[in-house]
Length: 331
Image (cartoon, rainbow, N blue to C red):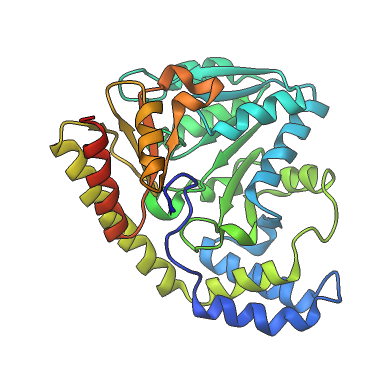
């Protein structure tokens, strides 16, 4: 089955990452290995380009989102987020029963109304994915706008899950904005989705708030080792990113040449407008052993039911996908 539905990497982890997992597997009798943890923080510090005192690690970026919602709940804050946004967030909002309000993205090109965001930000918790999921586009590029939002808001959580594919980050602002939290993952560019690891870049104030809400020693030793090994081999990650970006460009070109509307992506996936409800074609693709994400199947995103979100696979996989998609669209 061709997995183009979860925004995973089509490439395996680096050999160095696997070697580090084996090396530290002998320590699985322990909850914590200080030497490993400190080396991991040092490597993350070098990679991100900030002092390690601004970094904390977590058992997946999803756990960070849960902590964000807990923080909003206990501070009796309203969460401001875009619509559409990461589909898991809708379920989390129901589970945590957090008050929330949406900034609707434009219907034609999914751009963000920054004036509306500013208007709604006063005293509230802000969550933005930049670039956005599922729309694949950058929502915010202006540093000054982010400053204005942060100065009005209680806290700003900026999810940079696709940073390696966009090259855009606001991580340097954490030194001046004590309520800004940058969320990162190793699931995409580092090919470590199964390791379940996320990290934040934030000042002392927000790091303290989030750490007070979490349990200790939540990141497994083998996960820390896998990430450390991946960070030791940055060329492997950059090679994967370059391959995915090139395959993304080629795939988008083929789809647009076929008359489909595809947002210009800054992520590891494409947001494809089929021009008609996608469920039937999603099912036909599935019969052809291709899994994609059909927004018509998602209760909170049915209004975008013409769209498929398609993860970028290897070149030969995307050639197969394009061929089959164009075939099923004519049936």
